[in-house]
Length: 240
Image (tube, rainbow, N blue to C red; front, side, top):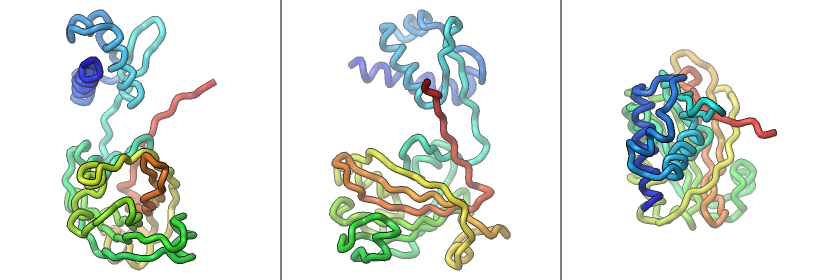
């Protein structure tokens, strides 16, 4: 299948770039060389390279070829341009993590919760507080609100593993769009109690509204990060 072929090429090239076989600011082999190496069509190679460009690994330079622009990041990397779970993010960065659920309850949305989350009043939701330990340190506390009609039969055990895996696996849901807001806020009593603050008095906060394929907002999350370990990366292209 052509789709499977260009994905295989993308994964292979991405691995070589991440392992610095192709170094920062060096050039990828020519299109002709890649066609011969992978025994495929030019269009298949071009689709793989487009994926690399979309993910911020390479940039096509007119008249020269395709340049590597990827640089490995020393700190934990979370991507603003995509939707990924913490489990996926730490796996991509070769880190170890543990999630501890400190609160798991079911609520009916009232006026106060509706203002905070944008869920309609009267909706049934799960409210979860999760402390995230990365490489042994408590660095993040998440306040998760999930719509019960979409994230059906959620349990504490699932929340300690991966809610997104559960949704995309057993529930067969599609997670499509998220809108995020980044702020810096003073720590709360709960932050101070649950996170290894190391003397910091503020938190980097990411608030997100996430939608499924039907356009239903099924999640509102406020993710509160210790500021010295908070690094988000994005990429953008200027459109004239």
